Every structure is written in C-alpha cells, then in structure tokens.
Image 1: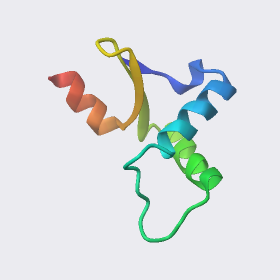
Image 2: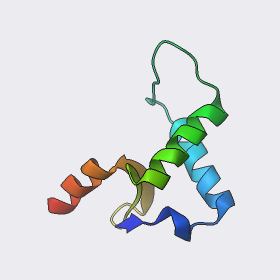
Image 3: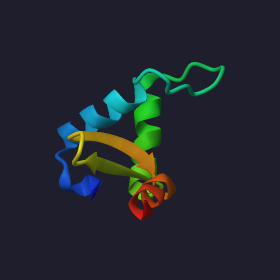
Length: 76
C-alpha cells in the first residue's frame, strides 16, 4: 500500500527518511555524503514521485521504494 508522503507530518516524514538513508546497505558511492544532503535528495525524489512510501500490511513495516519497484510489487 502506497502512503502519500503529504499525509505524514513533517516530523514523521523527516524521521522516516533519516531512518531509510541510515539503514545498513544504503551505499551512496565512494564519496561520503552528509546525512542532511541524503535526506534532501530523498525528499526531492518523494516530491517528484520517483520514490514512494510503502506500507507492508503483512509485516507492518514501512519502506521507501522507487515508483517502479512499488508498481512491480503491486503487480505480483
């Protein structure tokens, strides 16, 4: 289930994005990028609709996926 980012409070959205960009396995290449820069990048992707917030009912968890990944999951 896709959750529109506009439905979240600014504080909740900020926390969700920060948690996502600090997860193990989120590698941004050889150059270290400050946390706030990573957060702004993801927020811009959310605003453009390139990235969406997905709630998984089975696991009761939330993640961010590319729109394409979310659509592929929905088709399964």
